[in-house]
Image 1 (cartoon, protein in one colour):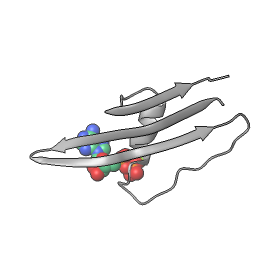
Image 2 (image 1 turned 135 degrees about the horizontal axis):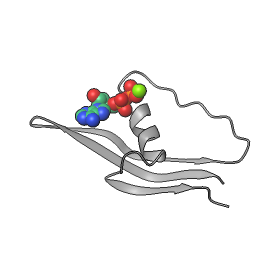
Image 3 (image 1 turned 60 degrees about the horizontal axis):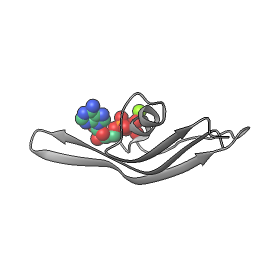
Length: 68
Ligand SMILES: Nc1ncnc2c1ncn2[C@@H]1O[C@H](COP(=O)(O)OP(=O)(O)O)[C@@H](O)[C@H]1O
Ligand SMILES: [Mg+2]
């Protein structure tokens, strides 16, 4: 496995509102996999990619990169 995320949770505060974007997202990516992350606008695709790319931190969960 070259990348994985387990039970990722991420929420944003928007003024007095808590927006729960990722509420337990998991995925595993293996060598030679070709994956697409799909979903309607605002569902959390970029949030997940930022977390898996280590550009942002999850509130909970684990990210693994370059697992062998
Ligand atoms: N930095 C941020 N601060 C507050 N809310 C955010 C931030 N980034 C994303 N959001 C909110 O999180 C939700 C998911 O956004 P995003 O991951 O960009 O979705 P997608 O890429 O699937 O369109 C949206 O409701 C968006 O408004
Ligand atoms: Mg996006």
